[in-house]
Image 1 (cartoon, helix red, strand yellow):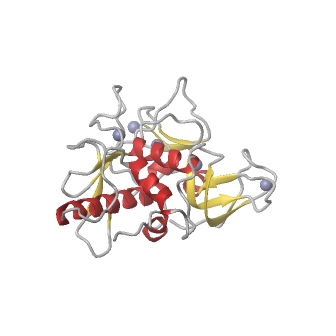
Image 2: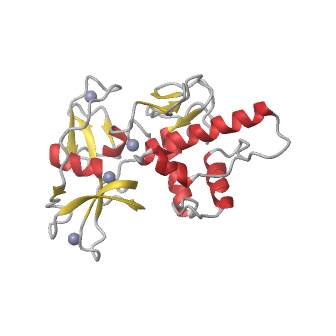
Length: 255
Ligand SMILES: [Zn+2]
Ligand SMILES: [Zn+2]
Ligand SMILES: [Zn+2]
Ligand SMILES: [Zn+2]
Ligand SMILES: [Zn+2]
């Protein structure tokens, strides 16, 4: 897909054109109202503070989402607002849609533009670990400790490790990242407080041991390292940021 460097959101922000930029400061997207990070369309006029996800800007520009593996039969169209009556839920993250969306012309499925671009699989360079986006999970979600995210029709998707042991609902991941951000745990400053990074990890996986301590067995340490790697990878997927950047976010000393 060709990249658009400048877009004009003539309905949302008619005053100025928006430019594609990368910044490490998280933002709330003016289109979909969800948390964003990294690549964004931003008004160059600093007083405006109007920012869109890269994916939300592409939606405005192209009107079509990337190919959808889980919704192959759907014909998605971009909308600024849900054109149908009632609240719509994103079929990828199972959270409410409050702004920009892709909706199937049959009215059966809805997607946040950012969710529609989540990577289906990703790997850690130099490792065999492959993390996949899946419909069903075999283990409990690291955040909510359940297999099912919701009782309704829309369950959303989950990220699952190669061995199926580590699972994370996309919904829980988005909520945990938003939490980490509002609590000030996400700090890109390399000198950020070590304790905050531990708290960020602990908030991502509340019932898991995330501290490496002297006296732990080699197996326990290996398990913790795997867990931390998994968390870094899924966070980098959800934030749309390269793994290296997210790594600094959680660069805790593992000695
Ligand atoms: Zn957005
Ligand atoms: Zn502006
Ligand atoms: Zn459909
Ligand atoms: Zn979503
Ligand atoms: Zn969950």
